[in-house]
Length: 346
Image 1: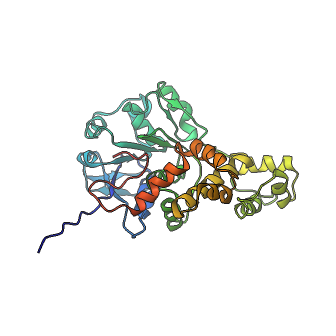
Image 2: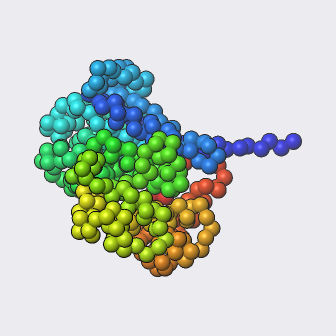
Image 3: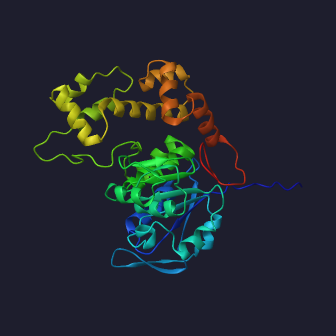
């Protein structure tokens, strides 16, 4: 009887580099987000491992240490490397140069490996030259200093995260969650990313261009919120929506509503609605066989031409190409190699 060989798809390997003085919250973000990403067969899409400059205890900025089993040699096996924030970067922060230990560790990184930083982890990528000539971000409180240290980097302090293909950076703390979800969405589509967000009980999507610092992220007790209007919109994305209709849901003037909306969300109502419509279109393209014209109507873009314009602007591909990529990812037979989707690096 002939022997049938079944190949097993290898998860995309994410290696997190834990440095002394790390922030435990940010160290846990890649494990939490990538660790919850699964395909329709409930198989894990990523393998997440942690390494240090040497195996052993790594001090944090809290009252405990973490023990890391792997040394920097593990970086050579990574498809994606994540560098979380640290408060003890030494000359990396003060002089913009790598320590000998960090330089030796990063020498293990293979060409083409996707590099990701969370918050001040961007100092490490910049000192190593990964950000030269690229747009990048970090926590807004460090942005001015970051730009002085690394003049070759185009620092944008007003965004949650940046995506330059094989190098991605995020602002501080929770923006790391947004960036990791963005990577899942880029690799495997909106359906997988939204499921991951639900498993983690976090909002499924905040655009990278959203402002880091909004004036009123949590409305005060005497201030009306725009929450009800946003919920009202999500039930009516397929309909024509007027700003006056949104303002009416909160019993505000259009001028007050627009100002309050931007204070709470960091973007204008129109920008937010367009982002939500693109997200709805992505889900329909991934999960249904509806014609593009029908997807356009149900997502609120009206025409296939309008849908193509907005999807191309947001995702860099046409609706048809997006559907082809992620429908193929969902149904393709297993094969050797890391599990990645459109735009991912391996």
